[in-house]
Length: 296
Image (cartoon, rainbow, N blue to C red; front, side, top):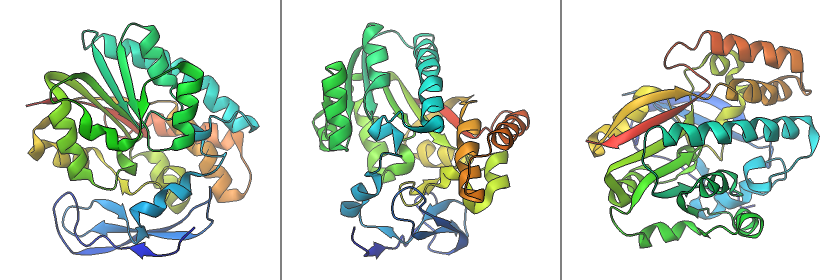
């Protein structure tokens, strides 16, 4: 694992080059190294800087503890994640069907393919993009899915997708502006764009601070609030139509955060903290949120 890091000079939201240190977070999953989070002095956006070079980021995903890429069932936390995911997959399918007529669906960062397979079985014409070679292989082997490397995004026909989903993916994308332009190109005019990301405005984020598992540096390059999503997508031709909660995320993130904070999983404390976070969430302060966007 190389050590050379790169610094972000300008905020991707407002382009300011002024920033202050926000937090120093430990990578508990892979490297055990500390990474700095900076806060833009202009708009308040938070991002990981300095960070590994794009070519080095893949090494920080090579762990059985990174569930979306390994699909591991080892340990209680992983088994709970698997059980909850089965329920949320059905809920995601129902949510999409209520808002968009069945057609072509692209899942970017599809991991091992569980969501894509759910939508395929429901009658959607699906394809996936996944940078991780091991995860791609699992999706193809387990579900016979059409999953391509990330470079394949450039080969997708313009205005060809009815739905594009990114479930906890945007925070991993090095080039935010370039990705949004790709999304705008390949989504149909009446298509639905789904962006799910952690929310650093949530109560669990405020409570755990540098131990909040959803900071997940250096894999998470950007740390969003609702206004950050609006400010990023609005000038590039998208409008946020709805914000939906991911209610289980507060419990899962709190379990990991308790482990990072104390060295062991405090299930009672994590459940209590997750419940408190949800009870205080209101409309836009859930631990993770789904943003439903359409072209203007």
